[in-house]
Every structure is written in C-alpha cells, then in structure tokens.
Image (cartoon, rainbow, N blue to C red; front, side, top):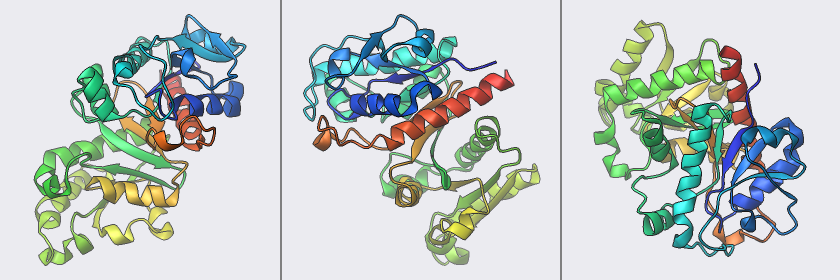
Length: 324
C-alpha cells in the first residue's frame, strides 16, 4: 500500500515559505508529490499554478498543485501582515484534517512567525509543535531535529535556560525517550534503536561537583529504561557527544535543553536539518529555519531544508502505510 501525497501548509506568506515550496516542487518532481495549502497570489511570479480539489490530484497536476486557501491580504515579501494570521493558522488546521482523515500521507509546515500570529489571530501556542499536539488531542509530543549525520531531541524546548532544571522530571524524560525510541523504529526503520542521553551540567556534573541532576534524575531514568531492555546510554558530557566518532555510537541523542540540541545539528548541517514532531498520530515535518523576511521574495532562499523535510515526510509516510 502506497501513501497518499503530502500536504504543505503555506506558513507566513510574507516569508520564504511560498518560494521554497515551489523550488522544492521543481527539484523533486513526481518523486515526492504534494499539494500546497495556500493562496496562489502569494506564489512567485511565473509559477505554473494548478488548482486542485483534492490531495490525490497532486499526482497528476500539470503545474504546482494548490489547494486554494484564501488569505485576507496580498502579502508583501518581508512585510508580515497580521491580517493574514487567521488564514496562516487555519491552513495548518486544514492540513491536520487532511492527514488525520487519510487523504494526505503527511504534513509539512512552512515557517511561521509567532508574534504575527499572536497579534493577528490570538495564537495561544509557543509554536507549531504545541498547536499540532492540541489539534491531534495528544498530551506528549517531542521535537526531533534530523539530518543524515545526526538526530537529536531536546527534552525541554522553548523556555528560558534558567527554567530548564525545574522543568526536567523523571516522568517527562522517560516519556521523551520512549517516544523517540518508538519513532525510530516506526518512522525511521531502526529495528533496535541506540539512544544517547546528554547530561545537563558541564562534564555531566562530574560526579556531583558541578550539579546533581545527573545523579538524582538522569541516571535513574536511564537505568530504569535499560532494565526494560532499551539500549540507552549516558548521561554523556554535552561537549563530547556530537563529534563524528561519538555520533557513530547512537541513532539519536536526547539533549536537556534547546540550544544543547540545536547548536550541534545546525553546525553539522545548517541547510539540511529537518524538524520532525514525534508522538503525533500523523507524520509532520518542517524545514529547520524561520521565515527569513530579510531575503523573502528575492529569489535567493535556499530550499534545501524544505526538500529534506518533504523527503523525510515521504519516507515516514511510506513506512506507516507499509505497516498498515
């Protein structure tokens, strides 16, 4: 059984989302069919638009496949308009409806600007990840940043660094590792995942001399999961976990906070990193960058991460379809 085509939500039309979607379509051709949910007025000039009524039509569309989704205003590249915020949000919700119904194989989300969504639509979520979890009705999801050379999951995401120690818990860390383990098997085809867990403090606490979170929280979680048969190692010092020899010893790393996860992957593969949400009942990926207002509409935006996000979503969707 093959997976249906993907859907791509428009994101902020004043950013690079529309142009990297078209660039990805041109690069991928029929290999990764998808339908774009958005307003065709926001596409780059000269884009051969093919308006379609269903996701399935994306496979045979003669041009760039668009599921029409009207926006309130014509977007000016680099100049976000809060008037377009409601449609930006509803395009995401429409994508979730399509993947949840089985009409689409997965959802790829183009970049949004949270302040614009708050100002224009009263958006009440820190970002895509939390909004998608709410739409799906699930309590626990995790954000994975994935590239060919590294997969990393932050145990805490968009919170100040000063709040990280209090936000970490044995229950939360355990769920993060379990969700990652299950996703590696189901969506990434890793039959026996190896998961490395970073420490919170320098040198993983150095036996308690630089902090006790490793002794009192992280190590007991690792020990409990290992007792269940999961191949989990750590806590590892964050400064020695991401060099090539270390990366060869695991399939994914669990970081304790946002920058501990994102700095290494953006250093290793800035253009090719993909954000994948694990724990949802459907496939969701996105390019690992923002709206890039400063270069929007100039024809210089790099579509590498969008292309990688579409390819990863297609592989994940195919695995789920094959598994039934």
